[in-house]
Length: 240
Image (cartoon, rainbow, N blue to C red; front, side, top):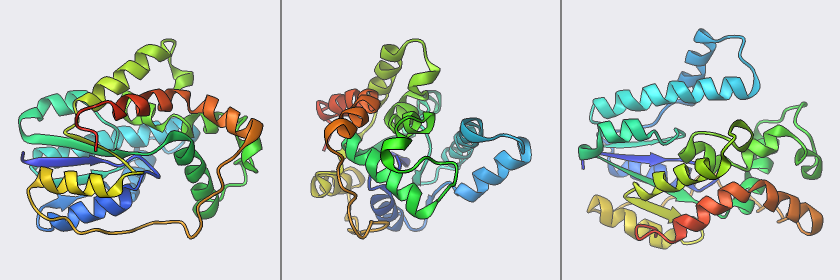
């Protein structure tokens, strides 16, 4: 292994574990600066808005990740989607890892994180109203977006898109679950053959309440694709 690539899905504990890994590989580590990818997006497509802007920005991150792999950076931790062509090109000298989280908890955490740190007058509030928006569909399908590179409302073949995401995770060297942080920490240390510091970053002061009743049913429906992907990941031999 020359490069360890940590795919950091939002609100899955990646800030803590990504920071720990980068400290472990202090002299050869990198992330993909959100401000850098945003600046590239603004320069190339200044009028892009909403989902179009997000997808252009993630395409910039594909290119930035390719550049880091070409430079043989030992540890890369970033909000970047899994790219099967990029992995195939560097398969002999790269290992991909990620950490997942139960989809309903992840979705609720993501929504409240955005409300706290990135308030937007156009974002529906409270949560019950937000569930009727396309942005809710996007937030609820982050595993599909990161590993299948699409969203439910963008594909005519959702089952195929989910299958692609499952197959992507099968290629990972390690897949963790945020409900078992100690097990993931041990597996990471084994993978890199050395100690990794235990860090706690970007944690909310109070965990958002899990919805119940009809709201919970609606959230589960929105998270259906991610739940299928998450459940499949639990069955993988490399899942910690």
